[in-house]
Image 1 (cartoon, rainbow, N blue to C red):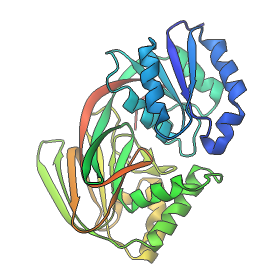
Image 2 (cartoon, helix red, strand yellow):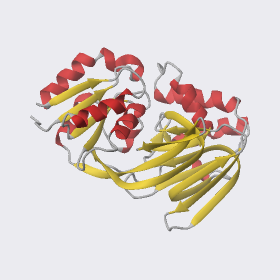
Image 3 (spheres, one colour):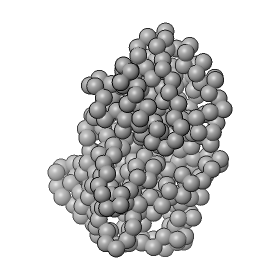
Image 4 (cartoon, rainbow, N blue to C red):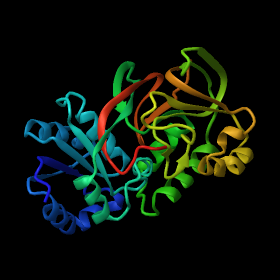
Amino acid sequence: MNEEPIAFIINPRSAGGRTGRRLDKLQASIRARFASAEVLLTRSMGDAENRAREAISGGAKVVVAVGGDGTASEVVNGLVDAPQGTVFAVLPAGTGCDLVKTLRMPRDLDASLDVVARERERPVDLLEVTSHVNGEPRARRCINVAGFGVNGDVVDRANRSSKRLGGKVTFLWSTLQSLAGWRAPIVRVEWLDDRDQSGEWEGPLWAAFMANGAYCGGGMWVGRDGRIDDGVAELTIIPERSLLRSALETPRLYDGRIGHLRGVVRAKVRSVRASVEDFTVRVDIDGEQPGVLPVSARVLPKAILVRSLSVTG
């Protein structure tokens, strides 16, 4: 049995409430593998970040997020000031569960708990993303994918839905709804690439993604050509499309071929800045919607230890 001090931050409302309904089974499986496990439940948005800090204060060396991508993101932010050597892990128990695809975590609960109990940890990158709330800058850590444009609206819409249809259907339907009302603003994007060369783009924007991991939005494959531990992120800029063209091209988001479409800009980047005038453009970070443009983001190489099967993608 694993005897290391470990804490499980569980969001019982994740996966449309299914996590809460199987809480007894989940806790029994945890107790069967971890002699010193602490289980902390979240009650509202933002609570997982506070619970992670509590876990570290209580001596936990490994902190596990049990929920969706939003829960994982909150726990990561709760570990910002954790002692060196603190380990993060995530169990798939949410609507989107995009991060676990990059980390190759099994969808089966017992199999994923075995990974946490037995696998070694690996250093992976984070993004530091600063957006604005009521005109004030707010910095957040992002472990998976950050973006802005219609995707910010999609995340806002998806998070207000019941998510009972699952991640892919929820995000696809939210995407189509958001596209129907989207009015593309003129956005300026600047970046520093993997060779420390500057790049820029300006025009009417549909969506932009800065991918540390591989997937977002219930399976959109926006980080196809990168790794979560390579020191750079995959930037994808999608310019304005007609509603019909957007609907026809949406499947390319899921098969990883969005970069092949006309007008799409792709780059491996170390940092990104984006600004807009007289328009509210929402930012999304790991499936949550914390602020609006202007936004700046930079890669923090190997900033956190993660326990998983692998870190490819």
